[in-house]
Amino acid sequence: MKIFRKLTIILTLAGLTLFIACNNDDDEPEEKHNKVMVLTFNSYTWGITLHTNHLDSVYSLCDTLYLEPETGWDYYNKEAINDLTTVLYRKHGNRPNMKGRGSFDFTPGTASEEDSLKLIGLGYSINAKNNISNLSP
Image (tube, helix red, strand yellow):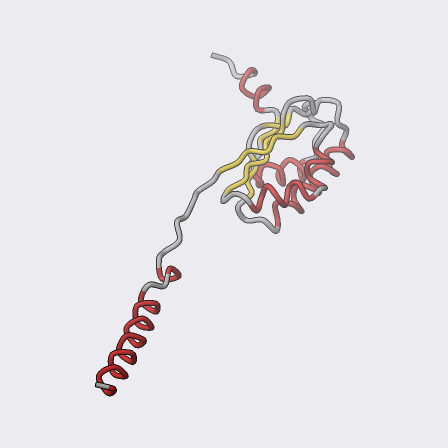
């Protein structure tokens, strides 16, 4: 009887160990959430939006983050556009799932060719409303 009791205890412990090992939740594939977020900024708030930890915290919550400019960029001069482009290029550079979307409405001819190409390369457009409205029917 003692041997049967010891054998039962050993088999029970072995069975529990096997059950715990097979019931591991780590083996299940993780659900992937394709969260897409849009963070808008304008000519007054871009410094705060892009230079603070707010951008990093929003970026960490989503799979794809779109930065979208609002209107009101028409008073920006070449230096201000260059500063904005430099910051956006740096912010996009180390975040592969961050994309640009929308249009900057700079005064036509104000943005340099280099800044224009960088912004377009990030996914933005420049003066899209002006370009569309100038097309003849």
